[in-house]
Length: 68
Image (cartoon, rainbow, N blue to C red; front, top):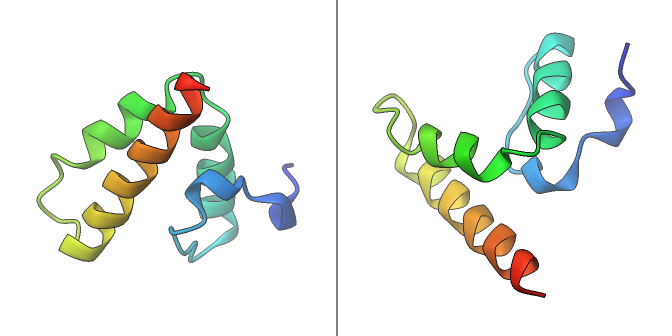
């Protein structure tokens, strides 16, 4: 079982609704392919424009951190 209080800060804009959500968020956040996962989410028509905006912002942060 993962530690729910330590949700990876890279995905702190996502509000988990259940304990399973915490597990999924932690698994995705620790993935080596986080940028690809977030990019794929942008194609989901069910996401709100606000959430898509936050995903784009996080992708910029990830891209900038890779440069440094």
